[in-house]
Image: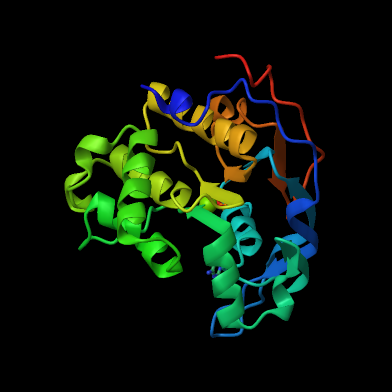
Length: 257
Ligand SMILES: Nc1ncnc2c1ncn2[C@@H]1O[C@H](COP(=O)(O)OP(=O)(O)OP(=O)(O)O)[C@@H](O)[C@H]1O
Ligand SMILES: [Mg+2]
């Protein structure tokens, strides 16, 4: 595979720490209780986090701990019950829905836990869609970008396949390519290696790490995999609605585990 070579390799130094691409300040999240008036339990109870360009942060912690909830808040898919989320310097609470959607399209690439590929579109068309919605590139450039993103994840042979005829791991890689193609400042990835074999998982993690380093993207991913977390520059366990102090990854993330 040539994924690393295709984006310039991992020899590029991380850019100097700059203003956070995304920040959470005292973020609390409580989903509304059941219609019966059952008490609503808070999922996030005060999360503070700042992620700079060039960083790759792994959120870990138990199932139901709030990892997906936090990713949704960081990416402006949802708004916190209390506290602030600053995305590309903008307070998401101050933006109306249309402005928040525009900001999200411009700044965020989201790899969903359950992919959310559109079944009626081919792999290539799924990847091209966000670029078309952004309306900034010519059709030729969109096609070139989409092909390049497919190549990055080793899926160029499957450009014309529909998601229903791809394996879970192949869908995951198409979903990753769709998130990368617009070259967003922030990449949010929910269990990006959950459906992959060990080797593919390591390739996807190396790709995310190198995107943060070489392209200066900020990457935040949720994972249950200790092996995946090794690639992150910071590992943050989410427990009881709060982020525990950062733990260093178990070994130098630059080395090939
Ligand atoms: N839309 C929603 N409405 C109500 N409750 C929700 C909603 N989404 C998530 N929850 C609840 O919030 C809690 C955290 O869920 P979340 O999906 O963020 O956990 P997670 O850490 O991503 O778990 P997993 O590792 O299983 O993906 C869970 O108790 C879940 O039931
Ligand atoms: Mg989740």
